[in-house]
Length: 115
Image (cartoon, rainbow, N blue to C red; front, side, top):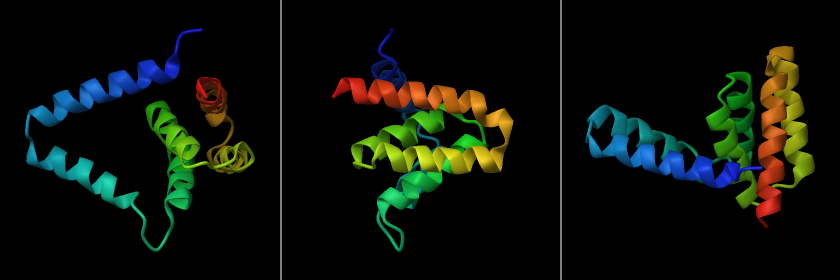
């Protein structure tokens, strides 16, 4: 199996660098807003990441799911909490979200294997 975690992170970093190098004010502000929205606030970072994971699943954004899964993993969120979060996303999103659930499980397994 290829190292999906490394491949994803290298691609994401390379493309973010390329996008931000164009120095577009609107794009830079969107990136900044995203960064600041997930910072500690009235909600803690773990809660925000789990919310981001649900929204990403329901919106069927695999890159976003991977990003939030990895941040959840780094924040020490237990697998049981992640799985319960994914179950809520599937309940809200319906059966069309199941393929994204499969890829989420695959990615979480890859994160665990890196340790």
